[in-house]
Image (cartoon, rainbow, N blue to C red):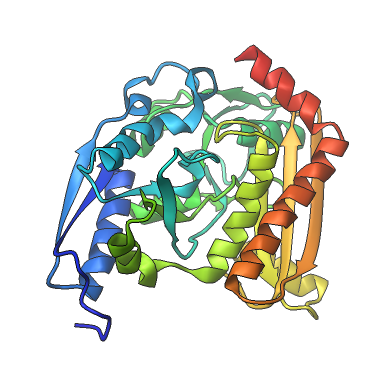
Length: 344
């Protein structure tokens, strides 16, 4: 038993989707909590969401990735569950009233993985090759980088997507690196897309734990799982997306890192590649908004020096997200996003 105070709760119920990756995430949080509180009983409440049921329509046309969390949130409202474990990139920017993200966990790899049975990299794909992804963010950046490629919608859990690749429906598919690593499918990764070519999704690689606001017993229980440096970075990314009024399924990318004030350009390049290099108090946020066809890709970035305590730094990170979003809006992001929303 750790030297943590014995929690007031003796039983905890975790709401989770039933996909292999979602179950891994819930089991990972369960196991971390049991390591801290071995006397607890922790149950998994397995739920099928609307997003899991509708597999023949692009997410952007049916409400975005929020469809993967609504039923889990209802379980929190009903008190059937105490917490819900999410991949943060699937969590809507505006949470329902009465719910909060109690924990931002340490971030895993933020990158996008290139998966192919034939080609070693996106640069090796022949002209006109078919690439599968369900993400408008990936689509707009890949099309900007390789306008000659064909993008074909790809839905389903990781196993379903890989089976479609194996069946020859695609020359390559793009998946989150962290997701493949978590379910021990690293061998399918031929390479990771360079972050400069394909900036990650808001929150990509991070797990978040949602719970009821004011549930102090649960929040106290979860506190040791929170990573304060990851939290600052992720708050900045989500503030950018929120200020753009973007959901989870829009061509918006954002990625924040923490740096040392005296870092060289070489150091910064390494920091870009390593999502967990969190040394330093310089918060660097990059954001992008693009046309789905890659014909226009807006970019903005800003660095600030963080000061004060954790709450003050989180407020500064939130403002940084707003500032970079405003830079994108000044360049025309609003018109791009409005046109996309109007076609849904």
